[in-house]
Length: 235
Image (cartoon, rainbow, N blue to C red):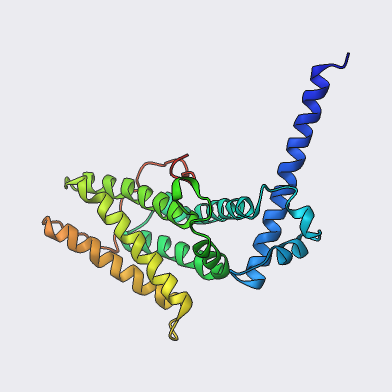
């Protein structure tokens, strides 16, 4: 009689090998998307992976499963790139500029992947959500905590933190998406400078309405460190 441990070991090795192959194919898909654009085909992805198309789908349930895996990997990359959002430091202007530069920088460097995610936004995402919405929600919720910290520091009403954070994230994301399609001669640096200035004016107006004036160039005490959030808010 064969040991169940031997069977368990084989199953674990098979699971590990399948996950490794899935990761390899997802990385190949990312390369193919960057090269061929958001309408990349399965043939392009298989070519990037160096395999025949049927072999590609041995590791995924179907095309939607592959798309979900690509979206999950992209969400992880975006979340990892936004360190200035998770650990803000310096003056208000420096905090805003660093966060905006990180967000716009990733989108500018991965324009085809961003377009791919938008194109496949509703492809089997959990509860109808898409990778872009997931990431924007994660960023906004993190910003809400940052805003709550400073609103509490200035003894202001923290209930506006959520509205402010989602508004700011939406501004950056929508403006950058439009810029990617029609830059109109505006450089990424100029775009980031514009967004930084606009965001500061939004925050400054909210503070002044409560009788608070903050010099945007003076250092602020950093919020307490937080664990980097998951790329998916439901996790």
